[in-house]
Structures are given as structure tokens and as C-alpha cells.
Length: 295
Image 1 (cartoon, rainbow, N blue to C red):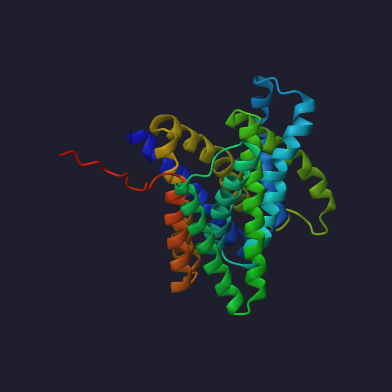
Image 2 (tube, rainbow, N blue to C red):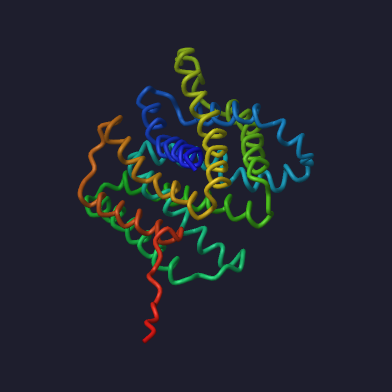
């Protein structure tokens, strides 16, 4: 039980810290292309043996692998990084995971023929309300740059939902799906490197290269998934899902502590709605059942 809780917390901390560390990297003049190459170049090399162990064919890699990589690979990271440069890591922590849950819920109804229970409907409605509060605040302030970044975060949620739904639809092993994303995106990094107009990794010190390479390519791409999978296998899917709901508040807290980002009461209201909505949608808060009193 203690191991499952610790592994779940590790996954939440890594996923919650990703937008903060990536925003910090941008302040150090590390480009989105460099972060993408570090993440998938390293994780792709490490996870390549997984494809051989599971005998994944080249045809499957070029079809299913490419589709999964669009959802959680290079396009997702580039869109997220550009959004973070326009908006804040706190907004990413609120909007991206909550949008993913909303799109996954809607997609599961049509693609996986799942039923939308009252519990999930209330949760999704609260999540949409929370995201609307945060987005409307940016629109009311006429900060179109932040609003554009927030819309990119919604796109990130849609892409990650695509990865989640396709993985469930094809019933892929989590390690195989992750290896496909990393390897395909790692291969696509080569033309990305060639098409870049600016020199890459020229002004980056070895220490910075190793630090961000370790975080992006090992901790985020591999350790977070392993920790979350271990937590779910020990605690069960219902209890393990609570750690996904912890990602938004962790991202906001770390953004305030590390980046000195200012969180307004409007954003606090939005994150509260999102957090409660995720708890409802994941089944961590349930409606009280009717109790029959016998005389």
C-alpha cells in the first residue's frame, strides 16, 4: 500500500512539474525544438528494445505508432511548449489535463461505446466550468496572447485524449504504446533537427544538456509512466486515478514556488472546480446512495 502511494506521488510530481521545468528551460534560452529532441531522442533509444521484445512489426509502427505519436509525441510537446511560452505553466496544469479528461470521456462514448453516468456528467461539467473560468479571465483582460496559449492547451488535451482512446481501442500494452510514441517521435526528430533555422545545442552547456535530458527523456517519458502503472497495479484503477487529479494543483504550487507566477482568486476558483470535477469524473467522490430504513 505504501509503495503504491509513493509511486503514485512520484508520477504526479513529475507530470505536475513538467510545465514548470519546461517554462524554466525557456527562460534559459532552451528552444522548444531542443526540448523535443531531448525528450524523444533519449527515450526513443532507451525504449527501442521494448518494440523488439514484443515483436512489433514495421507496419504496425508506421500505422498505429504514427497515430499514437501524433497524440502524445512530438506534435503534443511542440504545441505545449509554444502554449507555455505564450501563457503560464499554471494554466497548462489546469487546462491540459482537464481537457484531456473531457475529450476522453466524450470519445469513449462514441469510440468505446461507454455510458455517460450522472457521476461522470457532473464531473465533466465542473471541469468545463473551471476551464471556462480560467479562459474567460484571460479574455476579459484582453490578453489575447495568454488566451491563444490557453487554446493551445485545449489542443494538447485533445491530442492526449486521442492517444488514450486509441491505446484503449487497440488494447495496447502501456509500455508498447509509450515505446511506439518515443521511437516514432525520436525518428521524426532528425528532420526536425535539419529543418531548424537556428543552431541547436550550440549554446547549451553539458550540465544543462544532461539535466534537461535526464528530466525530459527519462523522468517524464519513462519513470512517470512506470510509477503510475505500478501504483495502479497495487492500489487498483480507482484509487490510482486520484494521482491524475493531483497534477493540476501540483503544477500551480510549483509554478508559484519556482517561477514566482502569480495566481489570482479567479484561477483558484477555476482550479477548485477542475479538481472537484476530476474527483467526480474519476469516481473518487460518489453521490450518496439512497438508504432504506426498515421498521
